[in-house]
Image 1 (cartoon, rainbow, N blue to C red):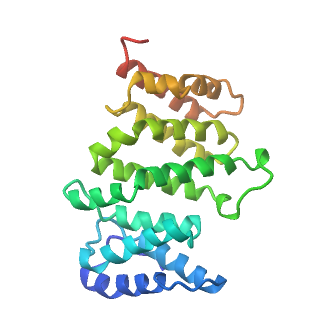
Image 2 (image 1 turned 30 degrees about the vertical axis):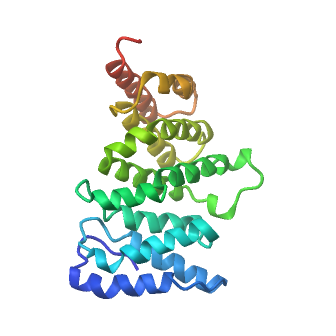
Length: 245
């Protein structure tokens, strides 16, 4: 069951509590886990434009996230979906909710998940691939939700930008040979990060970003679109840091 911005407030008052009630069950069997994952997936597809009153979800979704952080009861995809639903409710004006997300270590959680995914994104390099690492959609969704939260919170971007830069560079190193959509999204995230005011030249150098981009451009199988993206990254670096280049 998927939703979009057409979900009315009246419908949300019925649907959201039912889905959260299903997720809050603590049963540990395969059928219950599938039900939880489907409920969280449905919640994560309620767009930000859909007005969901805070009293319908805030306490419950925070409990779900905290419980997983303590007990690791959710799959990677389900845990990610819980964060997506929460972050999609945020905006720059909701300062208390942003503070809550920071208190619950959203930045470090997202980076940790992406770092683990970087280790198993290239199946050829890793014989033991965790079951919930196999789908590249998990990477794409973490990148989207991380960026969405960064747009809300300037303080968050300032604190986490260097760690995120390192994480993206590691993903670029490991994701060679992945499907085009995954690799292209990682490149786009890297380019957006380069353009942000929070990134310092020293941080770019420390993450070996230049070496990774040059290596990418010398890859024989790189298509024209990704080659153009690499050139755009270099141009962005020159524009941002002309004194160093």
